[in-house]
Figure 1 (cartoon, rainbow, N blue to C red):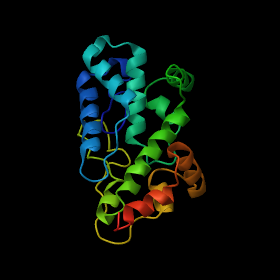
Figure 2: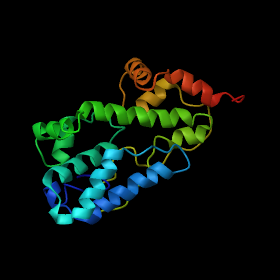
Figure 3: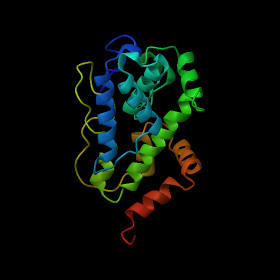
Figure 4: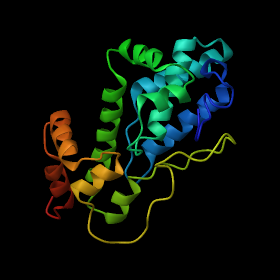
Amino acid sequence: MAGATGTAGATGTAGASRPDQYARALAWIAGRATRAEGPLRPDERTVLDLVTAIAAGPRAAPGAAHRAAARCYIEEHLTDPCLGAAEIAAAACISERQLSRLFAADGGSVPAHVLGRRLELAYSILSAASSPDRARAGTASTPAPASGTGPAPSGTGPAPSGTGPAPTVAEVAARCGFTSAAYFSHAFRRHFGHRAGDLRRDATDPNR
């Protein structure tokens, strides 16, 4: 697995990965969830898969190890608008069909999972929109621990500094990997039950 954890790429197969790589991934996700500015709630299934892989070590079931690798890669590359099943499957060293089956076993799909996580990220940024610096920080994840397996993934670099107006809904959509602001707004309302613009307005209203 490329990026922060190197879960699959370092060994050629996700199932043969070292437990410490999963531990670094888990620490990175926990750090992103507990940061003061723009925290992103961790995906519970990803955390469970990582814990299972860490506990089992080399004896981890291939399915669990591959799923952990795939979910971590998604977390690390949420902001990449080109993120797709082929790239995720390659990172986990499995075929796209195998990847689809892993997510289907949990009652979901790869596109639905990616969409849900991007919407959660957007929610965290919009919720922090009352502070421009905090809103900008929401687009940058906690710096990933060095693993020596490649460059840091997208969305993990330092946050831009400076002051200015809170990001617009369209800007937040783009920062979270959406290529269409209209699609983002529709998906956001369907997922959370209210409009992204309403959340931004509430967050920036000094009387609230």
